[in-house]
Length: 204
Image 1 (tube, helix red, strand yellow):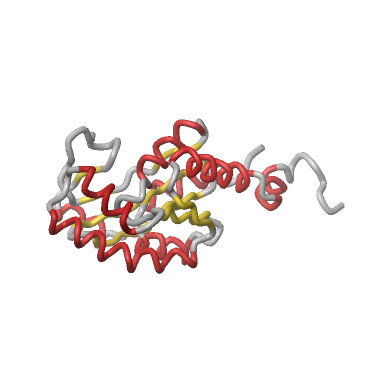
Image 2 (cartoon, helix red, strand yellow):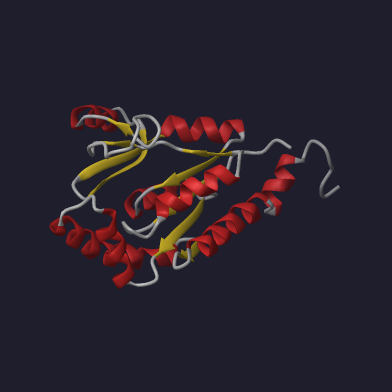
């Protein structure tokens, strides 16, 4: 069956568990590829260039913006993040499903141009648990954590326009729900019929 690739866009406030969930779902679905974003933020311990992100200078990022190389980009917590337009277009044409874990600003940009995309928002159970997770990561200063908490309040208000919301209270349950979303979207009648139009004469 030949069909266009599905674009899955996952957003969440920092500390909600988005990255961990996305890594697990990529491992579960062999046909689902993670889109590696570009960023100007420093590399964290354990991260690899080209795997976690494409780490670039502010100048290189600005050049890509000027050239129209991004399908979306945004500044988050003082750093810039962007998704290469070529990555999405090549995947869609090849029938490759792609998963993006990006912020609300970038997701809103993609919503305008990729209306067939699937948009999922990951919520923490509450702000107390969100703070506990951010502190437990031990990667940010107290000032940065407070800024992330403040930003989260605004980000969470954006959840209403997403197609799906998953509350990450219990990780395994949240993973099961995200898995169900990916499975269901792959079985949507429009996508299946489009992929089989050369095999069956639908509507004849």
